Length: 580
Ligand code: ZN
Ligand code: ZN
Image (cartoon, rainbow, N blue to C red; front, side, top):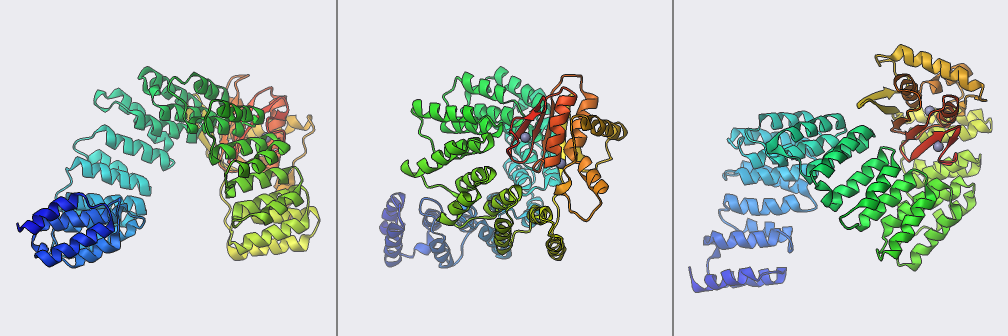
């Protein structure tokens, strides 16, 4: 190697900027035919393509100057592209490489698969998988884990499972990938089953990553018993020395309806609390409507010298919102600027919701108008919802127009506007909304609810008749309807379109999934056991009234977690104070 190149090797180690790389390049070009020293050109490419420099246009330009790039040259650029903000380019790069005369190796496939996972490129992942098999890399455990991870991320769980089953050797990492993949892919039940299988196998002891996946599965299902068991496992195996695991346990208890347990874990934490721990606890109290408690934690955080961030503020604002603490919320929102924090669209959304629910529509609208950022769909939906509650037709029309401009295709928006018109008996306008819905082919999101009974999760759709105990459930519902009439129940039918008959409307509402789940809960659990239900959408007015009355008529505590928050019904009242 000529001395100029030897010096270059030393210089390469100190290259930390594009300027230095360019200096080196011109030095190399003037002093020797650097083309013939792959060890140098590979390093140079890696430097350009990977962080901290990560200048991919320069890396590709350099690559195209090479006469006969080797597999390692190709891989260097591929790796950079796979980590870049445009992972799809890595997929194209991989395709170009496959067409070239260079042979791909296991590393090539691994980088390309990682890019597929990031770009959610399901089809390309399948193609690369086929090549992995063809090139004989099928037995590579690392590659297998990467494949598993890709399929889990792109949501192809059938293949994830297949890869997993075919793996000659498995380690905790592949398990973990599958548990979290299943949990993310809404196949939480399977994730939990897999987790318990792992605990029985000495070689596959679940670590902190596995328990995080399993806890997240419980949170999604609202599976309190399952969560308790995992918590027990965590304590036994001393995994609770990880702050991140404790945070997840707090979050799990809160999402499974037991805010008291969440708080006990929070208080008893031996490992130091982090900012995220405090934020999780604030949000937990907020979701359950314990506004004052959430604000106490918020204050305590400051006393403990922990600097709150935008997320803490959001939690505190949500707490005010769910707790009906209007003045506190407005004060908090206004204090953000003083602490050098810029409210984002979520903070705006929450304060607008807060004011809107309190009937202070004009103030809410003023805030929307003053926003330095562009109001999003959720914000206009919030304002539309408040306009419906307070029967403000003008505001409702204005919000709806904005929603259409923003291209919102949500069924709920149309229903809300239609309800505002219906409340004012403007049937012509109601008809127009219906037509617009049909024209735009607006799809209703199907509602569903879960209930856990003796460790088994039961799922109900609206009007579901597929449950094995369907007959008993429906006769229980009839009994409920009859019984709560004595407590003053009148169906709130204004949430259904007006052009179906009153009786039909009552039926449509009568079989909402959460009602089915509660009826099932009443049949299958012993007296006095709290009934806990999870719903994917917001609970409707009618179900809310029914739940309140059932809690009184049957003397049962009922907890419903809907898309936005928890409702705890007891003795005819709800923890949200009808404010949700
Ligand atoms: Zn309902
Ligand atoms: Zn409520």
